[in-house]
Length: 267
Image (cartoon, rainbow, N blue to C red; front, side, top):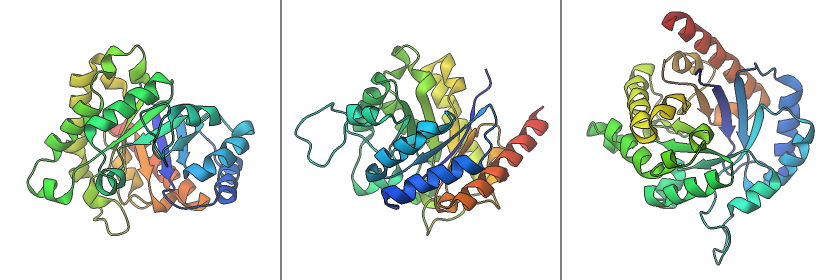
């Protein structure tokens, strides 16, 4: 089974509802999405209603995601958002485990496991972010780190019928993301992406071979294609380079070119 190609961005704590809706509308008016490709944008919570309203006439291949969710369906969790609330808006995807959530809000792999199960139970897609810190990389435990994160967060998922078809993995080395990140090279990413693929097979069984792996970390049009040419990378999760429609399109175009080049090499 050929894995789909995915490309998208997370707006983080940026954009008002009108700005996010305008981004979505302009993107849909401009982009051409190949039949085996899905694009996604992940606006802040306050923009989700405006974007899902704008998406009533948008393409099914352009997903709308949320940046986080709580594992409980309701309760005394001031400031949190539940899966039923997101599902009522008609979103497609939930980002879980972003490095900033792990670092600044102390999210644990065990709690992420509860969130993964809550999202999958509602039939929504999961984009699970994993990645090692600079310190972990210096100690040469990058592969062990992402394997641990995956094994805990995806524990029990293999027992849920068709759940693996809703899982996507974003590999974001913490040392490479953000404005001060160190740009990674494909040779840095390839062995860790391979370790992620092996771990997915170990945790999820045969369906793990079909779970897309995205790369994210200091990606822009100049280097996007070098990552999508890697055999275990099935798309990109881009930051600030895709926060304008022009930047989104330029990086997407470069990523497709790299994917096509990788297909020719592997073929």
